[in-house]
Image: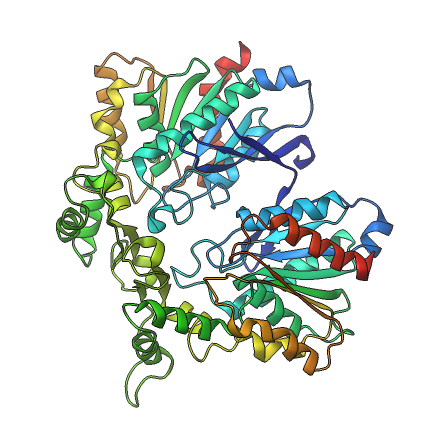
Length: 301
Length: 300
């Protein structure tokens, strides 16, 4: 029987009458360690959570070299998109809270890292908290398999597979909530399924589920938070971008231009890597781990 | 008390290669042999739940350790969005529980009790009616329905769901054909007003036709607990929150009667005062009942 014993500890961080669940990996009991070595705060991808495979490999590599990680569940984890409470921008104060928790443990350097949607969150957060005087602990951003613009990536993918309903049909429905016609009450939020969103079949694996509100904030054409290219230029700390050459979820295309946008905006510490793999970095977790490790060591060892 | 417990995040694979995550919580003190002798409660989450879900799944393991017992809370293939992504076929959860029991037994735990919460209680009962293991000593069923398909049908009727139960049944038959389990077809769908009178997302339920068929459909034998509880030979504790809005008072008694009539004389039914569907709303009373069941094995 295959059994794996993970060394992480599940913790709960109080937040707004709820709790943020997180997995703390690695031990750093020495004050000097906590002051000098960065801790990596990790954000899950779409429908992900702290137990995901992709959330799991990197912490092991980092922990083996003495770097702690905290993988947190945001409002977008698990079922957040399905039941209306997973609003992209609402995750930012949750990340603040997780940073406060890490600072409370004694860490003085925090790197914000994410995969896919988590990469969008990491860059958005790095852009919003870019004042080093107010946020001196934020020292870097790591974004893996992060799209240039999530709304555009989703729109292109739905068009490619002939989604039912189409992107524009959903936009019209969602607009009735956020931009009701004159004299009309805003529509209520509603759950919907998009078939053929990920592939050519009607099978669940090719379907996506949102509510109009969660879709609007994450995938709609007016979803500002997930248009990564608009924010990456505001990130002033070092950035590591790792792309998958065969990413079927976000499509390669313009994702590769993200680094250029950051450099053109004046960030002189932007590193990009391209790995021969797909969106989940299958069979490339070790390589991803080593790239991340080297990048961290080169700057913060 | 936190420093007295030790947490282990464990992952293991089932026979069909499904990866199960679980949280093992044990006392931090004492020799290993002593810890293995202490009863351990294997906990199973409810609908759309997981081992960090609020209420019983989240709170009970730590409460049990504080009272000197061990606990392992597991995520089955129905955890999180399993019923929405299509991987959560109810009948297959038997393999998840089987693997968890196997893991605990291999670790050396000799006194295993399985506690299921809500839909998890149904999973636990289904496992126990089909499998036996010498290390498993008892079953605790919290907030279990007499028949999940019947309860769901009534629930959908009560809130005037759209589509109706019958409409979904008909569509499921059309999509899945004569052999639903092996059907190559499946689709995700939403049931509006399934859990409440409004059309807001929190009143919706989402399934695939396959997960619905095996959990809620009119032929979902595995969730009709009354049909197989008579095959369970283990001691059973049935608990229900006195104010449970989902499970009616008669359901526990009726299940207990079926079990007793088949010859199982070790069936206990308890109402937890001041508690709803989640009995940990009155943790003192809930723990009292569980400890009552476990303590015999603890002394031995």
